[in-house]
Length: 291
Image 1 (tube, rainbow, N blue to C red):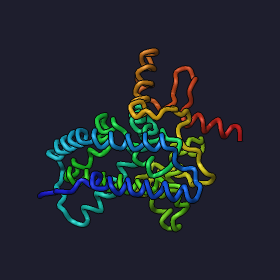
Image 2: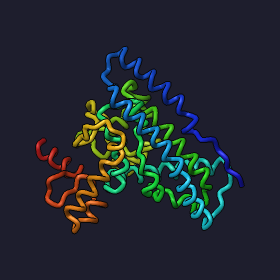
Image 3: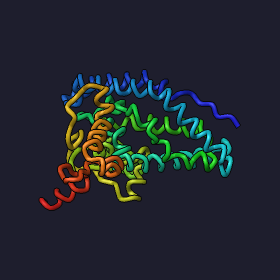
């Protein structure tokens, strides 16, 4: 059984650039302060770096999936119902990967890159990690080749998910139709996800289907306009620093307090042994006390 697919992400690059330019024109015309030149250029640089690193990391991921596929329990043929199951399985796996990336600092060190911009636009969608693929994000999907999904089909579905998530990084779209907002991830839902306000932190982890957040208790509707970025912003447009700053922070924390190795590496982002920093849950609890 052969699965041979085009590289959707590489093919979509001209469209990414075109839509970013279109959004710049439209937001300027409507006087929406969405873009900052240095920020947008940093996001684009992160995207290009992700494509470059992806040549290596996707080969590694394909090799791992292929190894797991050798021990599969079933062989799922190229049928219409396989694609439906693949879509649902991939999207559910993405939800738990994404949720874990906000709850485990080891995974957050890669994912924080995507949240490091204080702007929300289509260029921000391109602000992607350079380390996620080589640090084990694929473990959340390993059950899929074991169940019998072909590795090439899984990687193709990863690309479809990533392409879908491009268009939701915009402030030009307020709300989609009510039925669409209930089922699918939308700009409104994802603006919440990129907010740095305690009420909105670690909410709406969906890739394509927002139903997972509704099912697992992480859904939050957009109420007021979010403030984007991190709870403590990095104040840098240097792509290398953006890509590595949280890994450096982990290294420094462990070096200064080695007995807290596991907590600083695998605890929630914001955890500190002396309470000098706050996790999302701690910030949310403080907000409720003040209310």
